Image (cartoon, rainbow, N blue to C red):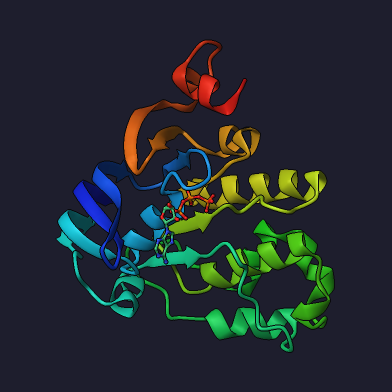
Length: 233
Ligand code: ATP
């Protein structure tokens, strides 16, 4: 579904990603794991066309999207949820969902308020509340829910569990598992390996903008593995 082939990318003259290969299939969740500065956010931004690509190729569903403008890439069904949770603070939860609404796609699961609220039941009691009055975890749920209203085929999630209370992190992992089960692919950047392990099928380990390991989540988190060493397990 999403494929990077030997991607070199960065910002201005600073190269951050080196020869990066990556693939996310339909209904699969892949976690990008690595220390601060390893290039996780840059990988997600490259998928959505927000970095300077200097080599390689990015494909979405077999289509070359290298160099396409961000809004064009988004319109193909890539939903980006950035690290800084972009809710419309003065709008209610319901209005935030409404802002995201796009017509369904023939080749993707169809999302409307009812289905989105089934995935995030906690938002049901908050529909009239201004988004500014939500907790960080609730805002994160709302951002993902609003992105689902855009009918994505693949979600790019940047550190979704960061700064969220542990109980809410569990709810979020469960909700995202439901999104994956509905057939939406997920590429996530995550430092919380428990969260990543709960959601991801595979992980790619990044160091210095290079993929230095890749495999099934269970295999990578096994005692003595390279990922375990990086994560200090
Ligand atoms: P973190 O968890 O800290 O966000 P990360 O793995 O997501 O880490 P990136 O944010 O992708 O890492 O950063 C990778 C490298 O790119 C870092 O060295 C960072 O300083 C650099 N970088 C990030 N954004 C920019 C930018 N806008 N301009 C120049 N360099 C940048």
